[in-house]
Image (cartoon, rainbow, N blue to C red; front, side):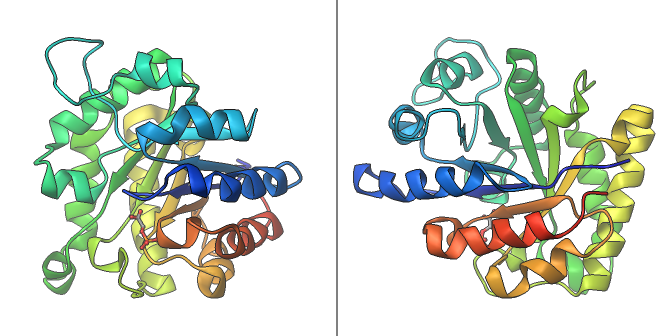
Length: 251
Ligand code: PGA
């Protein structure tokens, strides 16, 4: 089953008008990349990012599960689409922790995004204490089971990102063997949930991905791309990661 790699950048709470030039440079290089490339930016920047880079995949970093209503400060899938977004992240650990999002919330958000026609990247990952306790694989597998949407009509519009919390923004990365073990387990859960379609879902790795470690990570079986935070803010840091993904064969 060949899966085209996806390299998605996410800007967290960074990005104003002055940063649009970076998006333009990334979008230009993405046109010739042999991998899918996307940037998930703050909601305030989505519409301008789409205008700065027509056709390039711009996304949001969260979506509310309801269509509309009394949810002050929240943004629906229809609103993301209206702004020109093609995708959204759901369940990032920073939101699970700081905004208290549960697996059930994340599942509902994923379902809302997919139903509206967005592509969805659903994040899971363990804390350092869970990793140290030796129960990372079963913990993350259970988190995925509880967060998965009920169905996926177009598996290529749905991706999972395995992001160990202790690796995000720290410069620490799991061993290749640990990434491999986790991705194989998550693939098993996707196939258990969705049958053959589970083999078409991309499983990204995220957490301190940078130019110097991208090729090794992309070499791992069942790593179908990356979710990149800090190294996605500048084209000069992000594009070598896109090149590494382009250079590793589709599987
Ligand atoms: P990082 O962030 O690449 O800066 O570690 C990853 C993420 O938040 O998804």
